[in-house]
Image (cartoon, rainbow, N blue to C red; front, side, top):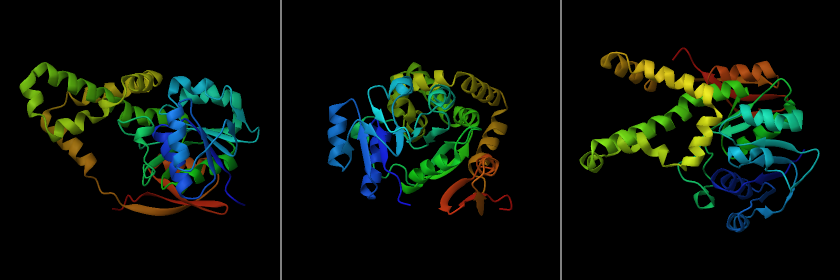
Length: 298
């Protein structure tokens, strides 16, 4: 069967990049944005601009707008709806209640500190991990349709639940935004000389706090409990002797990265076992998908 069309709502960095990548690959793709400049930029990349949404509908808007983003738009009753939001629990509670099994929560881990249609990059998703929620009520054929969209733009799909996703990204995304803010503010307190001498380590450690403050605030407040728990773990680590802390952190980032290929049936528990092991799905094969999990033997 031919791949269904994709409709993207929100044509900023993530949504615009997804639409552009799909259009470049020859996939039928349409889109909508309230910003005329974003619509014009997407149209120039081959995206059909329309308020009528069908196939796989992707919501690429800020978290506060997610609950009302479809107001005034015409959505095919048979469409599968997914999102690109950085927090999954609140979105699932809102849209999952409206759409039931038609909704599949998602989050590609590839955004940058830039935003808006000027930051569109069709290669943004290549090699990225794309978390895709498998809840008890998720309709697996719809999950697979969304997974195929992610795979089509070069991403690897990580099956998760919304709760697992939010706990994980609190540790590796949301707390780093807070730490970047704290590092920048503390360096400023050290005075102009410190900022004048700042180089690679400071730049890398503070890059993400260059993001829109409203976006960062919505993200960490929307995932408040997991973020607080993850931040508490960081604070506990900082109480360790310096040599122990440095050695422990070094061991994590230099650990071996072997992979073992796996074939996974399209079944919820089997898919989630891949994500929980730290692996990902990379290809569809009829009634199965293929992917990999970390190789503990390496």
